[in-house]
Image (cartoon, rainbow, N blue to C red; front, top):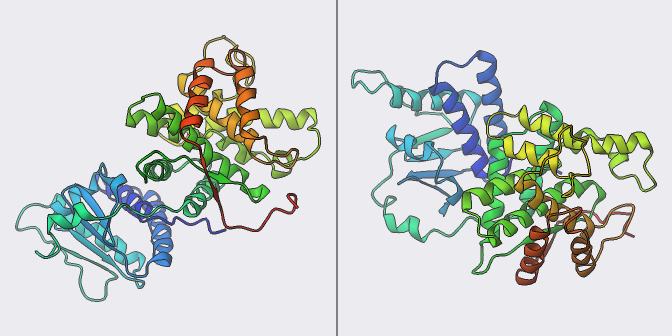
Amino acid sequence: MNHDLLHPEFFLVRLGRLLDSCAKGEPSTAEKAVLTDDLMSALTALLRLNAFPTFLFRDGEVEYEGERLGELRSWEWSLRLPEGGVERLDITPGTTREDLEGFVDEVLARLLLRDEAASVREVHGQSGVQFGELDIAESDPGDLSLAAPLAFDLETEAEAVEWLNSEVAERGIVPSSEAATVVNLLAVAMHSERDIVVPLVQLKSVDQYTTTHSINVSCLSMALAEHLGYCSTDVRAIGEAALLHDVGKIRIPPEVLNKQGKLTESEWDMIQQHTVEGAKILLASGPGMELPATVAYEHHRRFDGEGYPKVRYERQTHEASRLVQVCDIYDALRTRRPFRPPWPADRTLKFLEEKAGTHVDPQFVSAFAQMIGNWEPRQVQLESVEDAAAA
């Protein structure tokens, strides 16, 4: 499965990251090279989907190929690019690293060298990056308001989550901006119809478990938070923490994670360490990862204080950890694993109710059961080869 970034949002997030670094001061050669490499990787993946992508920036909105990217409304550069005369951005398959670097230099020059006498290099000729102001016909405000929401593809989301996992395995950190973008797109999918939809991905391959489980727990956690009346900012924050709650499992060998027989004592110790490892990875990933790190560390701590990891001083776990824990258990039991078949929904809910007050927070269990009754999850099948174990 392809691990490249597949959303136009990811390309823009990477572009913004490079622009931010350069705008704040001259980054080191190594830092700029890494950021440019990441941007080129995102562009390469985008060009595989669309050979001639076009972006429009106006009124704080971003439009891609006639569709509004609603989740980038808070993106700083959707406002700053037009200030530099970049209201439209066209990219071609021939775009080189030098083209992107020239575009970034041009944007920064326009924004930072505001003196009319300043020399600003125009990007023309053979460059694969073309930009400028919108034509009058293009700037009709009615166009943007009528644009349809960006189509949602869970297959693409799964590939994006797999890419996140590959970045963790390779670099030891989580790309936080991309993780937030995945969660935003999942939230869009949940509101793609008049009533909220909880799209749960069905497992078809043993190797897909980490990916599908992360997506499902994120969707369930956001749905539960919304059901409880949390504000949209908190809903997204919980969704991101849920998406990353098992990130520490990237450091556990697959043969241990998917072992069909009984785990040895050392293997069980290894499994338990994924909570600590996940928290370490997330805290090393930069600011804004405190809640995901907390949930990663606590999601196997029981409501009665038992569970793992062991703590020196007893305390109640974070509210987000207790919420995600209920959704984590539900999806884990509802999913087929190499060592057992999936549980039916009614048996899983009964199990949660039996464990309420000991293993899990009874208030979240009650709310979850009510939510499932109102919003029956929609099962979504990923396109992949059937797992031989299922047969």
